[in-house]
Image (cartoon, rainbow, N blue to C red; front, side, top):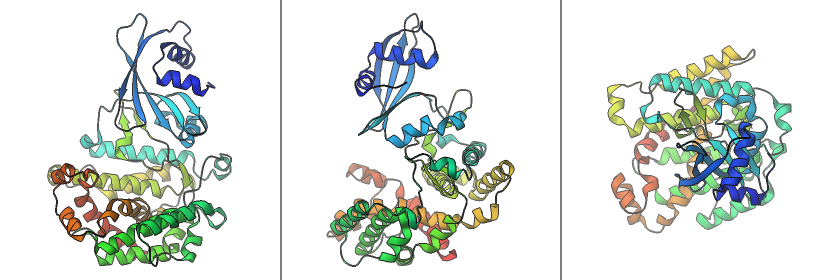
Length: 405
């Protein structure tokens, strides 16, 4: 339904009349009347749970209100219905000039990823493959969506000059000096240019700190510098792959299982077009993150929740079965490039902001790298808690992937 900002604000403020109108239209029930609405905050500033009570019923029904961007709203409106079984039901999608808002059916997470079995991981990975297959090589259709961007970008899809300029200003504020990224690299990166400049900033900060003891050493720094100076060896294998619609961040926390064992994938704010191996690597690295959080369980079952090789095979098999033209070998060969790009675009930009304050305080940095997770949380650096063990495994994987390009 088409709604105004005033109407959306009434919904956000728990107006029973506004919720009655929305739910009557969504469920086509004219006799439905909302008696009251209460609001519960959820983790994250952009999410709230609305507990809606109906006249004649004692139990409240939960819905999720999500403040988001126009990309997610347009996804639910346009291509989303083609993969309806993978999504929570969307009852309202409002697109505003400065922010947008969704009402979604609540999907209680009765089976969190920390309790996944190998079967759970395989089901999720095959659902991801099914999603990719639904939009496989449908470039003309996807190109019609003006709100949808090409993640990798090509030379003809360069990043806006103001975004590149802002990225260089960020570089100047955090690092300065000679950047480990050339004008050739910026041109080759296309729409990724601002992200790679932020990555170069993170790399420079790490160099000034002398790396991260036990996590990032000189060979890792040198490999990152080489790829930032000339990103074509990692971009070209990815650009040669067929494209599809990407979720953008299929993190394990975004997979929820309903009471009836239906799996849905949440948080579509980062939807883009690109090679599906990018989503695949993001998912695989999330599983590795989960392994490091529960080392005791990993010792009991070395393949828990499933080995990377098993998950890759399951994904490729599902794609091969569902598509008439699918080159599994090319996809598998692009995994190292996707892993390298994942590290450069996901972690280095974060390091720039997190670690820049320690550049002028080496003793503080030394103490920080020796703190336990409990000490990190106690001293205000909780975002680093749990990262050490995971990243200590990620960067050797990155280095081996970079060597294979």
